[in-house]
Amino acid sequence: MYLNRLTDDQRQPFLDLCIHAAMTNEDFDRTEKELIKQYCGEMGIAEVRYTPEKPFDEVCVKLAEICSAADTKIIMLNIAGLMLSDNIYDESERLFMRTLAKKLKLSRDDYEETIDFVKQLTAIHANIERFLKR
Image (cartoon, rainbow, N blue to C red; front, top):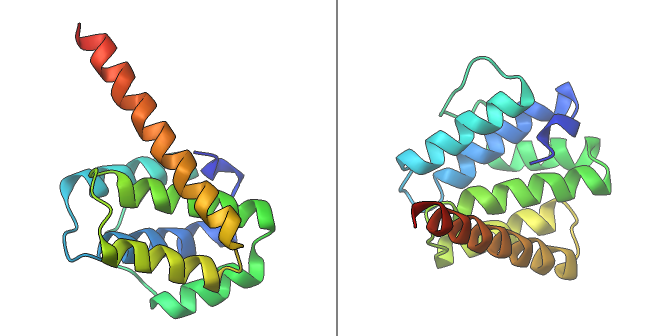
């Protein structure tokens, strides 16, 4: 969502960040891989990969340097969507998101709002799925 707004310089670091996020709880599942594939499609990245090219800290430093506040929010929304895609948000994922928010200089309020928005979207999608199946 809104990933087409990221610049070419932001897209590969964002993809690395997605991979690091998916590997957080050591359960890089099919749902997360499919979502990363969708993210790549939205960003126009032809070659989908599931191995990071850069370490987490290096990716965060790069993104903090080249992202506006709006870019950071887009990144956080999509990473939160990835983390919640399997309907499990465990402590390792929470810690990852809090660490990421700090590294990208996102305020605590914006971080909490990001998580709330993604939970609301997830609930809406689930309701639509139930509606379509009736």
